[in-house]
Length: 520
Image (cartoon, rainbow, N blue to C red; front, side, top):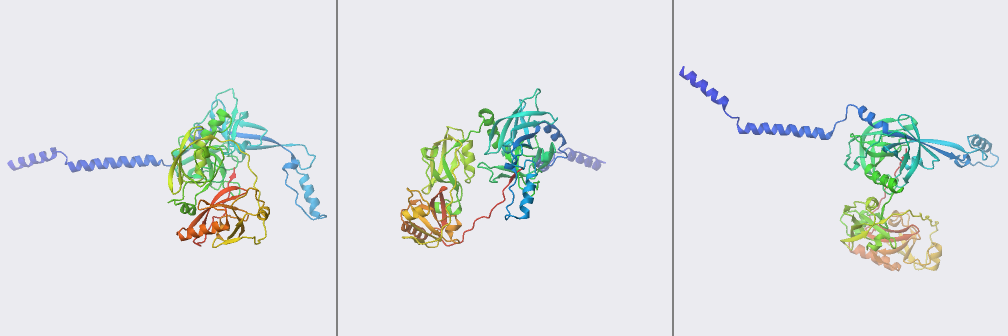
């Protein structure tokens, strides 16, 4: 009896004893792990079961853009194919084209209609779309979600970013959308596109962000969001949404061999579009910062010749006389590494950084010069529209020897002093100085870098040259110094540019042509 009583008392003491500290630690760890897994799942944001609620909320603020243009028939008709005189096909094709609407020279003007997309950003009736949607339009109509048709006026347009802002008047308050932060968007995030493909009316498609910061050679400020959401003809100007229903992009272009979606679409990011739209609303035009430089990419050869560790930044090929860059001390041959506190990873990023910098404000510029970093201060100007200078191509000349001509060993080119005969042969300016390229081998290093007969060599290794022997001696000096490339400053009818030529006789390659996007 006594032993049984002791045994029960011992069991009671064990049951009442505190949980060991190790067990508490284990329990706390399991709880923390469960919370971490839950947070990861929330951050990943799995695909929603349906986009219906989101689409229902957003569609009323997405509109169709209808444009009408007066077209003179013969000016828009294809040219009649040329056949030998008396050919039976000559009369056949002439009659065929003349029988088309507006095909005869005396045919009256005809009306052409096209459709695109847009979206309302203000209840007062401000509508955003692409510039190419309304280009050359005589009349613009905005068709609301309830089929109400409103006449629109152009508030402003910007061809460089392909954006336009319209204004409509309505007797009722219009639904509107909010801008989102495209910089916060990650590759793999879900997006929703709403537009008017092929004139069918409001259509919703979904996909993910496939890539960011795409350069498709559409303009100087390319920074497109790429998506696989179906975007077709007529979607131009329509919004791209994140899962919060905010506009993070404006659908603009597609890659397609057939004109239909193949899962490669591009949208102007909201971070680029919103400041432009704000300028269009306030000033009727986009106001951008201006530096006054002509720049080019920094290749590995150029970086090596300048002593840069990495191929980054923007190489200044020339400086506009009297521009902000010249006044701030920037010189041709400088590599801009930072501008206004922002890194310049490559050449194409600098124009956008400068454009977004406030006008008339001093900006700190870090450049690479003489083998070291230097800091300058530049007061940013305002970019004005400039007339494009025509490119005059030098006609092909049969190779011939010139007096004083010297062949540059290993580079596949010959150079000579500028003489009256050479000046006339290559149509050089009267004040042309330097050393002129008179012959280029088709398989040499010079040809691979785009150097052509008639180009002037002004500098070698950032030192001025005035005679052919200067070019040869400086290239040989670079070889003896163990450099793999030498930097040349070239001038031709297109302006100044730097060219890095390999001097170690290794083959050079250039990328092949890339397909161009098309406006949808």
